[in-house]
Length: 186
Image 1 (cartoon, rainbow, N blue to C red):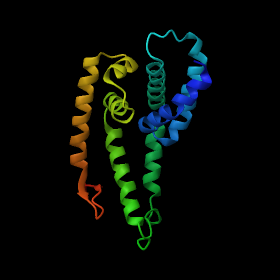
Image 2 (cartoon, helix red, strand yellow; image 1 turned 135 degrees about the horizontal axis):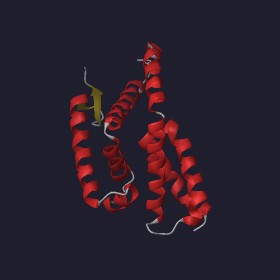
Image 3 (cartoon, rainbow, N blue to C red; image 1 turned 45 degrees about the horizontal axis):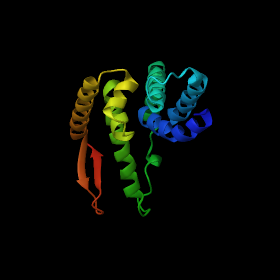
């Protein structure tokens, strides 16, 4: 398979995965990094695993390397965002649908915040399994861990996510019967 075909097939999937793992802002650069590494290493790909597994492993390692090098910048950035928040950030209460859209964005941010707080090893298996729909056996190969370890981490990740969601969020159904959540007061 040539690089162009690989890029066309895997770029959207890897970008989506990296968006969930590292956020939209980081995903663009990380996706480029992954495909640069794939391009440079394609001749050396031995086929010991599937092409998909190999590419996801490169993506996972790239995201983890990037996360460890940018942790301090992220904390500084989050503090700056907190300092810059103002009433202008809230939608016009008179705009039709604005409340619903605002609540939807807040709910997404809340869930994303809870997922982001999971330990990296739990977050990674959860994203690969639930968002990328990768089998446990493939996750095992991508992460270089045993199948039993994948199952244990996935179970623990789901339990931790459920517990965190219950402690951080209040769930309800809106007027459209859509499941919504609000952050609980601290």
